[in-house]
Length: 55
Image (cartoon, rainbow, N blue to C red; front, side):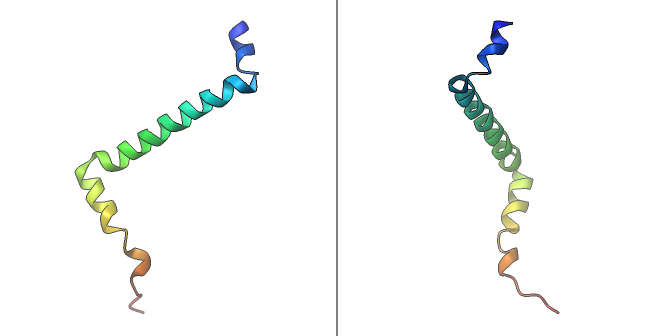
């Protein structure tokens, strides 16, 4: 049960949280840009805010 007490110390959880968030960030980036079709689709969306409405 000592390993549970390891998480209660702030100096231990801060680097652990950094590693977890970095792994999640890398996973999201790999998911979004790993597939060529998905990457091209996302690139086509980049100019949507600059387009005028036809209304």
